[in-house]
Image 1 (spheres, one colour):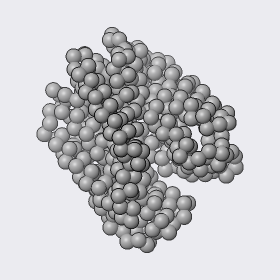
Image 2: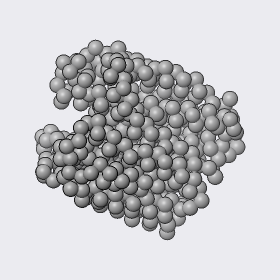
Image 3: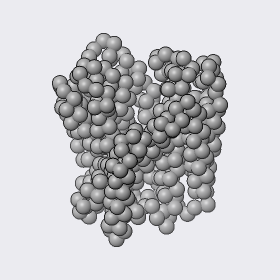
Length: 455
């Protein structure tokens, strides 16, 4: 059912629908896995007889593997075909999920989770590039909106799915469920398009510098936030800067660089990436601090907290597909700017909540944030993909994921830093800072209205 590299604009129906189903199912697995692992962490810690500090590597190892391998795997997708990298990621994810389910110690579970992270990166690094070849260019915003909806729904139901599984089975089943789902996704993945392949070779030195840069950067800001030792944190940050400079210098003269500095010369692309980093940092600032506020200050239970947080991703799921369709007709700068303004107002309204708010006062504010973020996300992602040349879709897809992870990592570290400095007011400060980030993102988004779409 594969099409040739010299295909028409998008896949024909029904192959198009099977292909987008394969992408959506794999993304659902990856998103759910992150959510359920966080929920199950206390249970896993108790069952394996380890400390919470050591068990956190079950989460951190996964995230680190994803972050350092997104751009290298996107580059491999350009060379060997996006579908091959995607299927390889799916297979590794399913095998690693089985290894997680069979783990009997923290060490084996951590190694399995790291492998699972590399598999997830194989999925995430090229999924946006595949979408560009699955759907016609005129419907690209619609496709991006569908994926944004899938991510939002998966995020919303993740804690509920984890709780339901833990209520009737051991934590190992949280990972075992990925095996049959992965097999279905692998079988359906044969409908994915065959894409043009680049003639350049894989740059192993750049891949190594990329891993050192992102790995040391994440470790450094985590150390700053959690008091990991100032000399070590400063040393890691210095290593990140040096390796980053070396990486950029190496990319400047390459026709298809692993770190897509060529795409960053395109004003629309660079502004969209910057908008994404600030917006996801704002989202994470709120997402990390709000559960503490709801449980510590508002006196809500864990279950009530989950329910009160749900309107945010649910409204994203509703608005994102609509915004995607609008993005095929209206400028991303305008739609994104309007969405980010609404998002900033939602964060400000949450920041001004009094310590014991009524549930309805929380719900409409959460929904307002979701409406704003949903209106921003689909047009922004469409702008990133459509502004890059088709043969550089892998680099654009990898940068899309990298921008999201960079923003999320920065936001989480800032919450931890604020908590260490002002524990009594960290929720308000985090939400106000998030609103500021959203307003900066709004300014960057609106700037795209006057920016050329090409160099």
